[in-house]
Amino acid sequence: MQTKPLRIGTRGSPLALAQAHEARDRLMAAHGLSEDMFEIVVLSTKGDRITDRPLSAIGGKGLFTEELEAQLLSGELDFAVHSSKDMPTTLPEGLELSTFLPRADPRDAFIGRDVKKLADLPQGAVVGSSSLRRQALIRRLRPDIEVVLFRGSVQTRLQKLADGVVDGTFLANAGLKRLGMDDVATEVLSVRDFLPAPAQGAICIEQRSGDQRIGDLLAPINDEDTAIAVSCERAFLAALDGSCRTPIAAYARCFNERISFSGMILTPDGATAHDILTDGMRGEAQKIGRWAGEQLKKRAGPGFFEDWT
Image (tube, rainbow, N blue to C red; front, side, top):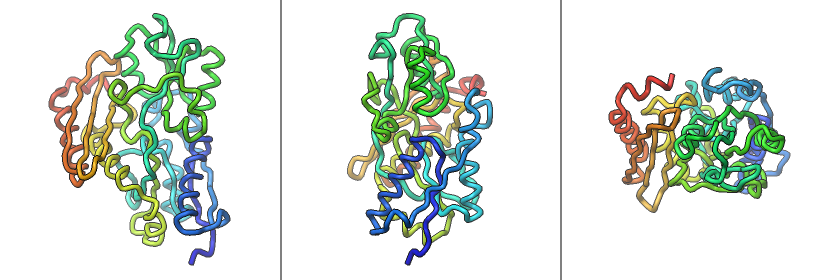
Protein backbone atom coordinates (compact mmCIF):
# COMPACT_ATOMS: atom_id res chain seq x y z
CA MET A 1 0.00 0.00 0.00
CA GLN A 2 1.42 3.38 -1.08
CA THR A 3 1.33 5.74 1.92
CA LYS A 4 3.50 8.68 0.92
CA PRO A 5 3.78 10.57 -2.38
CA LEU A 6 6.03 9.10 -5.04
CA ARG A 7 8.71 11.62 -5.98
CA ILE A 8 9.08 12.04 -9.75
CA GLY A 9 12.19 13.87 -10.93
CA THR A 10 12.13 16.06 -14.03
CA ARG A 11 13.73 19.08 -15.66
CA GLY A 12 11.75 22.29 -15.46
CA SER A 13 10.98 23.18 -19.07
CA PRO A 14 7.32 23.16 -20.14
CA LEU A 15 8.02 20.10 -22.32
CA ALA A 16 9.79 18.20 -19.53
CA LEU A 17 6.89 18.97 -17.18
CA ALA A 18 4.37 17.81 -19.79
CA GLN A 19 6.26 14.52 -20.04
CA ALA A 20 6.37 14.07 -16.27
CA HIS A 21 2.64 14.77 -16.08
CA GLU A 22 1.98 12.19 -18.79
CA ALA A 23 3.91 9.56 -16.85
CA ARG A 24 2.08 10.48 -13.63
CA ASP A 25 -1.32 10.40 -15.32
CA ARG A 26 -0.66 6.97 -16.82
CA LEU A 27 0.36 5.66 -13.40
CA MET A 28 -2.75 7.16 -11.80
CA ALA A 29 -4.92 5.40 -14.37
CA ALA A 30 -3.04 2.09 -14.14
CA HIS A 31 -3.18 1.86 -10.35
CA GLY A 32 -6.24 3.92 -9.42
CA LEU A 33 -4.07 6.38 -7.50
CA SER A 34 -4.99 9.99 -6.83
CA GLU A 35 -2.88 12.95 -7.92
CA ASP A 36 -1.83 13.69 -4.34
CA MET A 37 0.05 10.37 -4.29
CA PHE A 38 2.66 11.91 -6.58
CA GLU A 39 5.06 14.82 -6.16
CA ILE A 40 6.77 16.22 -9.24
CA VAL A 41 10.23 17.42 -8.24
CA VAL A 42 11.79 19.95 -10.63
CA LEU A 43 15.57 20.13 -10.83
CA SER A 44 17.71 22.53 -12.84
CA THR A 45 20.41 20.76 -14.84
CA LYS A 46 23.68 22.15 -16.15
CA GLY A 47 22.43 21.54 -19.70
CA ASP A 48 19.45 23.80 -19.00
CA ARG A 49 21.53 26.54 -17.42
CA ILE A 50 24.19 26.81 -20.14
CA THR A 51 22.51 27.70 -23.43
CA ASP A 52 25.14 29.77 -25.23
CA ARG A 53 27.40 26.87 -26.25
CA PRO A 54 26.94 23.54 -28.06
CA LEU A 55 26.40 20.56 -25.77
CA SER A 56 29.49 18.98 -27.31
CA ALA A 57 31.57 21.85 -25.90
CA ILE A 58 30.34 21.52 -22.32
CA GLY A 59 30.17 17.78 -21.74
CA GLY A 60 27.44 16.12 -23.77
CA LYS A 61 24.02 14.64 -23.15
CA GLY A 62 24.71 13.71 -19.52
CA LEU A 63 24.41 17.41 -18.64
CA PHE A 64 20.62 17.00 -18.80
CA THR A 65 20.58 14.08 -16.37
CA GLU A 66 23.36 14.40 -13.78
CA GLU A 67 21.39 16.23 -11.10
CA LEU A 68 18.38 13.93 -11.50
CA GLU A 69 20.54 10.81 -11.38
CA ALA A 70 22.38 11.99 -8.25
CA GLN A 71 19.05 12.29 -6.41
CA LEU A 72 17.88 8.96 -7.77
CA LEU A 73 20.97 7.24 -6.44
CA SER A 74 20.64 8.96 -3.05
CA GLY A 75 17.00 7.88 -2.74
CA GLU A 76 15.63 11.43 -2.81
CA LEU A 77 13.70 10.59 -5.99
CA ASP A 78 11.70 7.44 -6.68
CA PHE A 79 12.18 7.69 -10.45
CA ALA A 80 12.92 10.28 -13.14
CA VAL A 81 11.22 11.05 -16.45
CA HIS A 82 13.34 11.94 -19.48
CA SER A 83 13.27 12.44 -23.22
CA SER A 84 14.87 9.20 -24.40
CA LYS A 85 16.92 10.98 -27.06
CA ASP A 86 18.68 12.97 -24.32
CA MET A 87 19.96 9.87 -22.52
CA PRO A 88 23.63 8.84 -22.77
CA THR A 89 24.16 5.27 -23.95
CA THR A 90 25.95 4.45 -20.68
CA LEU A 91 24.12 5.14 -17.42
CA PRO A 92 25.61 5.50 -13.94
CA GLU A 93 26.07 2.20 -12.13
CA GLY A 94 22.93 1.36 -10.18
CA LEU A 95 20.48 3.00 -12.58
CA GLU A 96 18.48 1.67 -15.53
CA LEU A 97 15.87 2.71 -18.07
CA SER A 98 13.05 0.36 -17.16
CA THR A 99 10.02 1.94 -18.78
CA PHE A 100 9.07 3.58 -22.07
CA LEU A 101 5.77 5.28 -22.75
CA PRO A 102 4.14 4.77 -26.16
CA ARG A 103 6.23 6.59 -28.72
CA ALA A 104 4.79 9.76 -30.22
CA ASP A 105 5.51 11.06 -33.71
CA PRO A 106 9.28 10.58 -34.28
CA ARG A 107 9.51 13.11 -37.12
CA ASP A 108 11.15 16.53 -37.19
CA ALA A 109 9.08 19.67 -37.74
CA PHE A 110 10.30 22.71 -39.65
CA ILE A 111 8.98 26.06 -38.52
CA GLY A 112 9.52 28.81 -41.06
CA ARG A 113 9.00 32.50 -40.36
CA ASP A 114 8.20 33.66 -43.90
CA VAL A 115 8.04 30.36 -45.83
CA LYS A 116 6.44 27.05 -44.96
CA LYS A 117 9.00 24.57 -46.28
CA LEU A 118 12.75 24.14 -45.94
CA ALA A 119 12.99 23.89 -49.73
CA ASP A 120 11.33 27.31 -50.09
CA LEU A 121 13.91 29.23 -48.05
CA PRO A 122 15.86 31.72 -50.16
CA GLN A 123 19.53 31.13 -50.81
CA GLY A 124 21.66 32.21 -47.86
CA ALA A 125 18.80 32.01 -45.36
CA VAL A 126 19.67 31.34 -41.71
CA VAL A 127 18.32 28.28 -39.90
CA GLY A 128 18.85 27.69 -36.17
CA SER A 129 19.38 24.28 -34.57
CA SER A 130 21.16 22.91 -31.52
CA SER A 131 21.34 19.37 -32.94
CA LEU A 132 24.42 18.32 -34.91
CA ARG A 133 22.24 15.73 -36.67
CA ARG A 134 19.75 18.36 -37.81
CA GLN A 135 22.55 20.74 -38.78
CA ALA A 136 24.19 18.06 -40.93
CA LEU A 137 20.90 17.00 -42.54
CA ILE A 138 19.97 20.63 -43.27
CA ARG A 139 23.35 21.19 -44.92
CA ARG A 140 22.94 17.96 -46.86
CA LEU A 141 19.59 19.08 -48.26
CA ARG A 142 20.41 22.81 -48.57
CA PRO A 143 24.19 23.45 -48.61
CA ASP A 144 23.50 27.11 -49.43
CA ILE A 145 21.84 27.74 -46.06
CA GLU A 146 23.68 29.14 -43.06
CA VAL A 147 23.10 27.00 -39.96
CA VAL A 148 23.64 28.58 -36.54
CA LEU A 149 23.55 27.31 -32.95
CA PHE A 150 20.05 27.65 -31.52
CA ARG A 151 19.50 26.33 -28.00
CA GLY A 152 16.85 26.84 -25.34
CA SER A 153 13.33 25.63 -24.61
CA VAL A 154 10.71 25.24 -27.33
CA GLN A 155 9.19 28.59 -26.31
CA THR A 156 12.58 30.34 -26.31
CA ARG A 157 13.42 29.10 -29.79
CA LEU A 158 10.03 30.08 -31.19
CA GLN A 159 10.40 33.56 -29.72
CA LYS A 160 13.85 33.95 -31.31
CA LEU A 161 12.31 32.88 -34.61
CA ALA A 162 9.51 35.44 -34.25
CA ASP A 163 12.11 38.11 -33.42
CA GLY A 164 13.88 37.47 -36.71
CA VAL A 165 17.06 35.95 -35.27
CA VAL A 166 16.72 33.15 -37.84
CA ASP A 167 14.52 32.40 -40.86
CA GLY A 168 13.56 28.94 -39.67
CA THR A 169 14.21 26.28 -37.07
CA PHE A 170 13.54 22.61 -36.38
CA LEU A 171 11.88 20.97 -33.38
CA ALA A 172 10.71 17.45 -32.61
CA ASN A 173 7.10 17.12 -33.70
CA ALA A 174 6.40 14.94 -30.67
CA GLY A 175 7.38 17.76 -28.34
CA LEU A 176 5.16 20.23 -30.13
CA LYS A 177 2.24 17.81 -29.90
CA ARG A 178 2.79 17.21 -26.18
CA LEU A 179 2.65 20.96 -25.65
CA GLY A 180 -0.47 21.31 -27.79
CA MET A 181 1.55 23.43 -30.21
CA ASP A 182 1.79 21.22 -33.29
CA ASP A 183 -0.05 23.89 -35.26
CA VAL A 184 3.16 25.97 -35.30
CA ALA A 185 4.88 23.41 -37.54
CA THR A 186 4.89 24.66 -41.12
CA GLU A 187 6.32 21.38 -42.49
CA VAL A 188 6.70 17.91 -40.99
CA LEU A 189 9.50 16.07 -42.74
CA SER A 190 9.22 12.38 -43.53
CA VAL A 191 11.43 9.87 -41.76
CA ARG A 192 12.73 8.86 -45.17
CA ASP A 193 13.98 12.37 -46.03
CA PHE A 194 15.02 13.54 -42.57
CA LEU A 195 15.92 10.59 -40.35
CA PRO A 196 15.26 11.37 -36.67
CA ALA A 197 17.55 11.18 -33.69
CA PRO A 198 17.81 7.80 -31.99
CA ALA A 199 14.84 7.45 -29.58
CA GLN A 200 13.21 10.71 -30.70
CA GLY A 201 9.57 10.93 -29.61
CA ALA A 202 9.91 8.40 -26.78
CA ILE A 203 9.58 9.24 -23.08
CA CYS A 204 11.60 7.00 -20.76
CA ILE A 205 11.63 6.46 -17.01
CA GLU A 206 14.87 5.89 -15.11
CA GLN A 207 14.93 4.06 -11.80
CA ARG A 208 17.33 2.40 -9.39
CA SER A 209 18.34 -1.06 -10.55
CA GLY A 210 16.82 -3.78 -8.40
CA ASP A 211 14.14 -1.53 -6.88
CA GLN A 212 11.34 -4.08 -7.17
CA ARG A 213 8.68 -1.80 -5.67
CA ILE A 214 9.22 0.88 -8.29
CA GLY A 215 9.71 -1.67 -11.04
CA ASP A 216 6.35 -3.27 -10.25
CA LEU A 217 4.70 0.16 -10.12
CA LEU A 218 6.05 1.16 -13.54
CA ALA A 219 5.60 -2.16 -15.37
CA PRO A 220 1.94 -1.64 -16.38
CA ILE A 221 2.70 1.56 -18.29
CA ASN A 222 5.68 0.20 -20.24
CA ASP A 223 5.06 0.03 -24.00
CA GLU A 224 6.92 -3.02 -25.29
CA ASP A 225 7.10 -1.96 -28.95
CA THR A 226 8.64 1.37 -27.97
CA ALA A 227 11.08 -0.27 -25.55
CA ILE A 228 12.26 -2.72 -28.21
CA ALA A 229 12.59 -0.09 -30.96
CA VAL A 230 14.50 2.29 -28.68
CA SER A 231 16.82 -0.51 -27.52
CA CYS A 232 17.71 -1.13 -31.17
CA GLU A 233 18.42 2.55 -31.82
CA ARG A 234 20.46 2.96 -28.64
CA ALA A 235 22.51 -0.14 -29.49
CA PHE A 236 23.29 1.44 -32.88
CA LEU A 237 24.32 4.65 -31.13
CA ALA A 238 26.51 2.77 -28.64
CA ALA A 239 28.27 0.83 -31.42
CA LEU A 240 29.28 4.16 -32.94
CA ASP A 241 30.30 5.64 -29.57
CA GLY A 242 27.62 8.20 -30.33
CA SER A 243 26.95 11.32 -28.32
CA CYS A 244 25.86 14.87 -29.00
CA ARG A 245 29.27 15.30 -30.64
CA THR A 246 28.25 13.13 -33.56
CA PRO A 247 25.66 13.54 -36.35
CA ILE A 248 23.85 10.20 -36.05
CA ALA A 249 20.29 9.37 -37.07
CA ALA A 250 18.29 6.19 -36.51
CA TYR A 251 14.75 4.87 -36.52
CA ALA A 252 13.42 1.41 -35.69
CA ARG A 253 9.85 0.19 -35.91
CA CYS A 254 8.22 -3.04 -34.77
CA PHE A 255 5.88 -4.96 -37.06
CA ASN A 256 4.36 -7.95 -35.29
CA GLU A 257 7.36 -10.20 -34.55
CA ARG A 258 9.81 -8.28 -36.73
CA ILE A 259 11.65 -4.99 -36.51
CA SER A 260 12.89 -2.70 -39.28
CA PHE A 261 15.83 -0.35 -38.78
CA SER A 262 17.26 2.63 -40.65
CA GLY A 263 20.48 4.32 -39.59
CA MET A 264 22.75 7.06 -40.88
CA ILE A 265 26.02 8.76 -39.99
CA LEU A 266 27.06 12.08 -41.49
CA THR A 267 29.97 14.45 -41.49
CA PRO A 268 29.05 17.72 -39.75
CA ASP A 269 28.93 19.57 -43.08
CA GLY A 270 26.46 17.02 -44.44
CA ALA A 271 28.62 16.44 -47.53
CA THR A 272 29.27 12.78 -46.80
CA ALA A 273 26.84 10.27 -45.36
CA HIS A 274 26.55 6.52 -44.97
CA ASP A 275 23.23 4.83 -44.34
CA ILE A 276 21.89 1.36 -43.73
CA LEU A 277 18.50 -0.33 -43.85
CA THR A 278 17.94 -3.73 -42.29
CA ASP A 279 15.39 -5.83 -40.44
CA GLY A 280 15.09 -8.95 -38.32
CA MET A 281 13.26 -10.55 -35.43
CA ARG A 282 12.23 -8.16 -32.69
CA GLY A 283 13.83 -10.38 -30.06
CA GLU A 284 17.21 -9.52 -31.60
CA ALA A 285 16.66 -5.74 -31.62
CA GLN A 286 19.85 -4.83 -29.78
CA LYS A 287 21.91 -7.25 -31.87
CA ILE A 288 20.50 -5.68 -35.06
CA GLY A 289 21.31 -2.16 -33.85
CA ARG A 290 24.86 -3.10 -32.88
CA TRP A 291 25.44 -4.88 -36.20
CA ALA A 292 24.17 -1.87 -38.15
CA GLY A 293 26.45 0.47 -36.23
CA GLU A 294 29.46 -1.78 -36.76
CA GLN A 295 28.71 -2.04 -40.48
CA LEU A 296 28.58 1.73 -40.91
CA LYS A 297 31.75 2.14 -38.86
CA LYS A 298 33.58 -0.27 -41.18
CA ARG A 299 32.10 1.28 -44.31
CA ALA A 300 33.05 4.82 -43.31
CA GLY A 301 36.57 3.97 -42.22
CA PRO A 302 38.54 5.56 -39.35
CA GLY A 303 39.15 8.83 -41.17
CA PHE A 304 35.43 9.57 -41.32
CA PHE A 305 35.25 10.05 -37.56
CA GLU A 306 38.29 12.28 -37.16
CA ASP A 307 36.32 15.46 -37.88
CA TRP A 308 33.79 14.65 -35.16
CA THR A 309 36.03 15.46 -32.22
